[in-house]
Length: 252
Picture 1 (tube, rainbow, N blue to C red):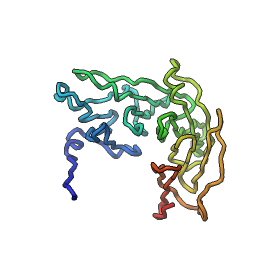
Picture 2: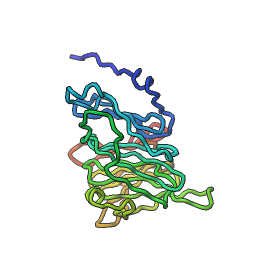
Picture 3: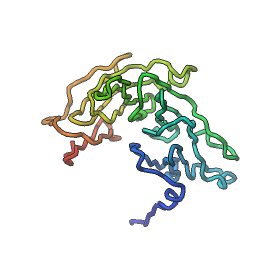
Picture 4: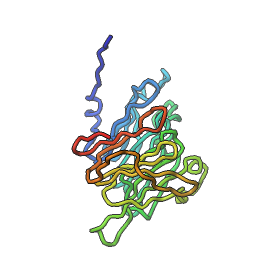
C-alpha cells in the first residue's frame, strides 16, 4: 500500500541554501532514518536533524563554518553510511579537501565543528569533484593542475587510501596514485578497486594495482565515445555494475 511522503523545502529556503554554487550533488539525506539533511549555505554547510538523543533535539541544526579565506565550495560528498563528509574548498593559493566525522556530532551545545583531516594542495587550483569509494576505503578526486597558460586545462584523478589518510599528521602527504586525464572529465568514482572516469567524449575504467592504476578496455559493447557522459553511478548488485548516461539520454 502506498503511503504519502513529503519534503519540507521551506527549511532549505529559510536558511539561504544556495544550489547555484556549481556543487555536484549538493543535497544529502543522512542518518540511519534518512531524516537528517546536509546542504550548502553560501560558503558553509548546514546539517539539519542530525541529532538523535532527545536532550539534543533543541539543537536540531548546526553549521560547518569554513575558513574566512575560502573563495568557494566546489564539491561535497559522503560515505555510503554518511559517517564521513568531505568538502572541497577553493582558496587563493591552495585547494583543500576537508573531511568531517559526522558520527561525532553528539554534544549539547553548538560549537565550531572542525575537520578530522585535511588535504591541502598547492599543485591544484581546485578540486572539481571528490567522493569516497563505496566501501569507504578510498577517496578519489579530480584536481585541476595550476597552469601559467590558462587556455589549457590539465586534470588529474587523485586516489588516497583512507586508512593512511587517517593515520598521517601531515596535510601534504602523497596520494596512493595519480591518473592524468583529458580535459572535460568531470566525475570519478570507485567500486572496490575499480575506478570509472566520465565526461565529455570520455568514459574509462581503471584498476588499482598496488600503488598505481592500470586502464582496461571498457566492457560496454558498441560504446560511442563521441558523446558527453553527464553522469555515472555504481549500482549495489552482486557483481560490480555501472550505469552511465549521456547528454542525449542514452543509458548504458
